[in-house]
Image 1 (cartoon, rainbow, N blue to C red):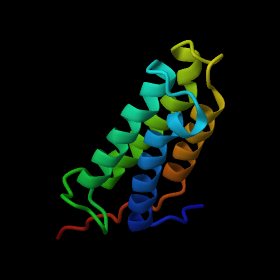
Image 2 (cartoon, helix red, strand yellow):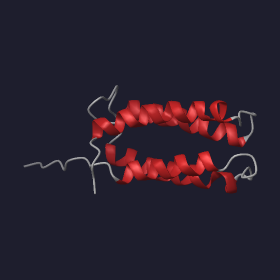
Image 3 (spheres, rainbow, N blue to C red):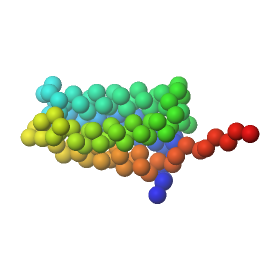
Amino acid sequence: MKIIDDGAHGLIDCAFGVLLILAPHLLGFANGGPAHMIPVLLGNAVIALTLLTVHRYAAIGLVPLAAHLRADLFGGAALAASPWLFGFADVAWWPHLLLGIATVTVALVTLPPPAVVRP
């Protein structure tokens, strides 16, 4: 069921990007290692991509929403798997897993962009 429109998705992404950047500090794993750096880098990427994506509140509007949603799916899956892929599951695994699943979920329930009909 698709329930999130493009504008809401953009606002969610901005808030989510900030949450990713702050999560290591708020949850106590800001040690400079991969558990810390992966969400910070991904949070910055999420904010940058959101500002570049075509949606109601777009700052620039260069990236099609469909491409943005595919990036969200890939990024969310990578974030969810990162504790095991990069060997820091003993430091912090649950924030990465939960935030990754949330990213994938939001991408899956976002309304697709309308089809462009050309004469």
